Amino acid sequence: MTSPLPQQADPTEKRRFLKQLLLGASAAYLFAPFYAVWRYLVSPSEKRVPIAPLTLNGGDVESERLTFLRFGDKNVLVRRDANAVRAFNLRCTHAGCTVEWQDAAQKFVCHCHGAEFHADGTVAKLPATEPLEELTVRREQGRMILFDEAKQR
Ligand code: FES
Image (cartoon, rainbow, N blue to C red; front, side, top):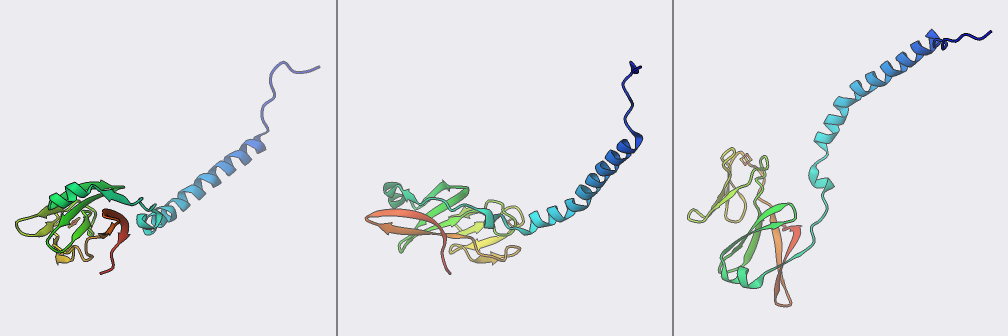
């Protein structure tokens, strides 16, 4: 004769399942700090995808001394002076705030922690220790093209 009630699970099976569950949770708990450290150490710049070159609107850049534009994920200032056209990523190298160009003083200022940069992007005042990223602007076949490649200083 068969029993009408469903059979109860074997207590040793339950125990084995709970052990595996506890082991998995413990492993995840122990691994989490290593994952966080790994994410911190791997620079986002190592994961970045290069931005396609951008043809600058010659008219605007030729006539305006200052042109602000978005280039991929970067806020860029293209500045024209008597000698050249230069482009700077406005991301502060200290902690990533956006710097402001102060035309009267001819310098970049970061309002987050007070860093300042000279007009050529070099550091004028701490806490930033690295210069602003300067992007390459080349004139090709009469057009000005902005490239996502840091200029060598
Ligand atoms: Fe610019 Fe700190 S982020 S000074």
